[in-house]
Length: 373
Image (cartoon, rainbow, N blue to C red; front, side):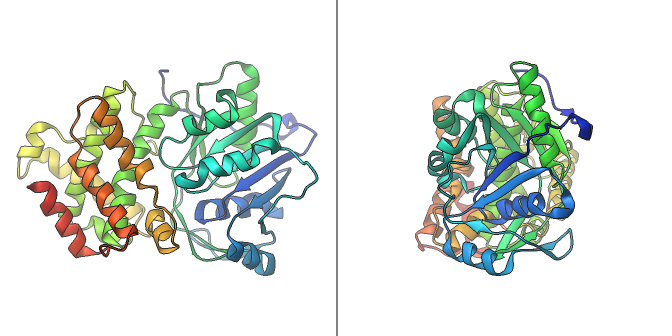
């Protein structure tokens, strides 16, 4: 597929179907909770019946008692609604199933609800990584949409959701829109997600996904290893260099897979930010200064972002590292591309999850020293 994203335009309200759309949000962590609250808010008037589903008893109990409590860049308020632990046994089917779990849980989540997907319905992947292919094996390729999330959220306690940065989505079909009906279906999804943030459509989902993957391999993984929010990490030159090296390896693998990379959030050009051989050898240069400045800007924009992988580890969950840096390592092996920065990051995050080491500044210094050997 070729071509880049085009800005989605608002669809006239009269073009909406008269039947109320049914939406299921699966996973009520940071991203899922914010999405569920936005679509459940009566002031949003989304014209849809919205339900949330979680496997976490604490989240279910907290939202049942207190509703969905939000804070962060959009201010503090509470939305009436709850995350269910099981769907009612009434056979209700859903037009859109929004998968907002962490990547290690997404396939099981999809299998658990695929029988509730309407005949002309679709599953939407909000995960970082390259999960659409995995969900296509469960729901079918023509029933999978990717939604690249360009904002951050956290759940500091069950049922409390903190949006840590503004932003929207890039959405596209796994294989592109096949016909006019597909385009209209995507219009319906755009209308829903615009309640949360601006939406861009793309016919190059792979390019958007790989660009976001490269970014997340750096910021989410370094946030896990460093045990801190992004803003405090990216002011350190050594951390910015690690981020650039991680992304450079990801870009090399994406190019080998003939992926045409897209700009992240319309601004971050991964083809440009990847280090050249001369930049890797140089101690300083004008181009290196520019790339470090870009990473500083990313750190400033998402300064409150805390790694969802680190949060998963703290809750005893399997971290998503194999779906991020692990993808770069595994796919790099196919093309005989060395990926030492991603490989060591993958090893360290698994070691953190096994409680063999503690995230923090010292672990980051150890990481930097090891890959420099």
